Image (cartoon, rainbow, N blue to C red):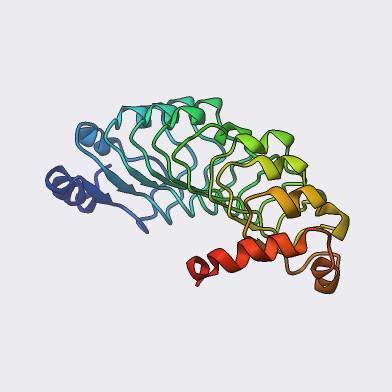
Length: 238
């Protein structure tokens, strides 16, 4: 790239396994990073102007954390699915409309942040990722949660500031879902069925800013069962 600053960062990363290249005005993935495919564990390319992630990203077989937040990405390459050791993927504030099917191969992924992108559909590609803890889909244009959400293993899903108007009863079958954030959506009180309220594992609904009064929520069938779950786990939310 002809940037001595980048070369210096890469020399350091060869020793540490961590490369920080944020806020450098980069418009493309630095070619010099190819020298790190064998040992890079953490890569931070946040707050740049990168529009395209090249297929060679799949060569970073030891990568555990990848931060591409605040760039100009419109998509991800299929090769992203080759990052079998990846645990954290931050894609906040880009223009991504969909995820490649190969995301299902990120078997060690724990947290994915897709807040502030161009998603209109819930990314079902995340189903079956057994180590997934947190999914941030806030500030997108998602209109519904599909029935196959029951395959999502996440403990927390953030859908704040979307356009969700209904909740599938399959939410009650999510095996680990404890926190569901739905603030500032288009939900009516009828979205919360007795099955969801009574039998789901959800212990925290964050639901301010929808089209119902919280008093109506408190009067729902199953509210008492929900409050039992909430009270039992509220210490974890503090």
